[in-house]
Image (tube, rainbow over all chains, first blue to last red):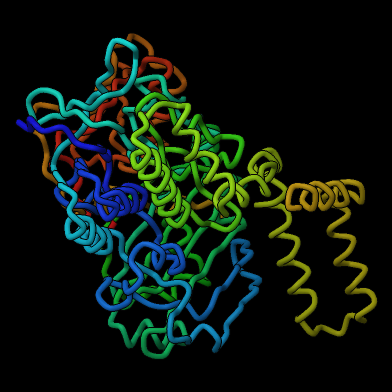
Length: 435
Length: 98
């Protein structure tokens, strides 16, 4: 039993929780972090891409010892139909820089490293401990937690909820709503192992260079979703995610979708002969700006995925998690330095600081995109990819048809499928939501 | 392309590590005569295929292979069809890569 009282209790040891615990511990606070997995990372699932900038602000010299996989030099976007893909690839030698901007990582390994930094900063990290309940005083202020494997209550001046997208504490305590099926995606992923030379040859990579493929199209069977292929050093992360509401509506199976993606003629040669060593699944917050819950209250703040902080359009989440954790911690440190209580009147500082950061600014920019992508999923994820594929094939196949007729044919296939006003409307709505 | 290629989710789960909390499933299906549409959708939507239809038409959950994504909680907790809690500390799926 822990008799002590802590300055802060952090629930969860993912990106957000580790960032917050690290920042508060470095700021001299007495921090307790609770994690239900056997170590930080053992319950955490992500693609995964690490954005260096946000980590650099927390651990400036992370490149020296963090378990990084490959630095990304190339991004491929694919629009797929059942037999083809149309690609937009961007590769630049500029990404072979002294301090690369993006890396692929393996979360279980990365988080273990991150957690070590948290411990070194002086925080107490208890793993294999599931927090079951928030403890409140008579006024309703959150003053601590109850956890299994520990008797009694653990008290802290502030409870930082970094419990992930499926966090139960905050929802059970009525601090925020449970995410709705149309506001979260379910992604499934396999880890395909291959010799590193094979990966480098297949993906056109030298040394530690890496590449990311992100794909939309008929692979999601008309649902709002995306497939991804990330090259790690000796394995390939291959996965696909779609909105939970769409799975519910269509009766598609996540593993069926994954297998179809894996067997696609554009994908199969990349992973041929691989050994699959893990199959995982995770929810991704997709509701964007409009789904962000109340971020602070009497004795608590919520950060990362638990606060739905995820940028669907740019597929950024772990960086928003880290930054929200850091900002919450900085706000808490500031309040503590003034000897003020952790009450809403003071904790609003966290929200103010977050509003000023890229986290909320980016999410606000795309506030209408999730709804657009969901309500028009048939057009954006099925019809257009098929039309683009047809048009591209028409463009490259040489068969004696005059080019002018080919162009007319391509245009006609678009207007037949969506009508001129439909095309215009889709483009208009897309531009408006993007602005 | 309507041929349904065989997918055995058991083969996928076989590679994962678990520490099963025997006798203490973290997801419980509420006893029912006729399953709700939400509960029925879990037969397909669960990525670990933890949900099965019994011979007398009820939905049952076997959570040993659960990968703790929470999809069933998102779909079925609100209707009261299931009770979802995290496994006790240290138990459940143990990701090597994540």
